[in-house]
Image 1 (tube, rainbow, N blue to C red):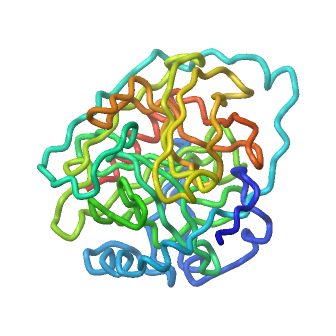
Image 2: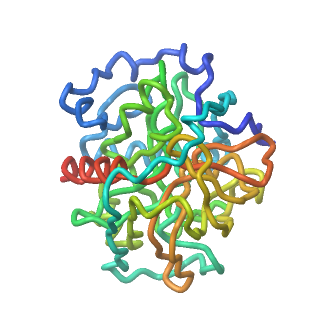
Length: 335
């Protein structure tokens, strides 16, 4: 039986104190990355090698056997007190005009070997990665449209432990995973990006990340194969969304589930919605205008944190200019 730890987006001290070969190989991000508010690292294997070639990417894909994927659990997170000051409760104004990037359909034709369920998207999948010390963990994520067609959006805590912590390794994305099936194969990250405020202070408002993916074993880019969601920022705190992810409290994390709700301001630059998904849904997208006939929508936030065992609500970062900055940053790094 999988162990389901407490549901929150701040890594435990125990994990933060563990060191590995990957950590010793990791250098501090360049100063100009931190100045922009974004931070990056080359994706690495569990023993610290950079995933900078097809050969190493294939090693990572081979590492994730069905047995390891089945054994992956969610990280041990400790609950952080929610801010209660008047300033944290005040609804902040958007930090710029609203903007959007439209979704794109797949460029390549693929046989649908697993069959599609209502409100199940081929752009949404399960993420697998190893933690310092070799633990096996999982999250949710989704593709996003871009010119280079390599980007996958998730939560900051699904790529890095947060304040005092480290980056994760062996980072792999399986679009529309279901009950052991990988209908579109596996995709391995070549680079991970997140907001500097997540790394330095575990800021809920900045719990966002984008992975840059290698091509698969056939040389195909992920958005060409499954399509990519659109992206929206500064669209206000009260919108209607469909959240998709792989919650371990529903179906054991083996298939996609969804919630639909309006959103509202929770605190700081964090929004909240009604949903009973917890655990592995971290990093799953909150989609505006989700179309279940093609599996596409506009990402407006991602699952960040909630209560344990779940009180019917969870939170995500408000997508303002910061997500557009991170998106542009990741796209500029993508080959």
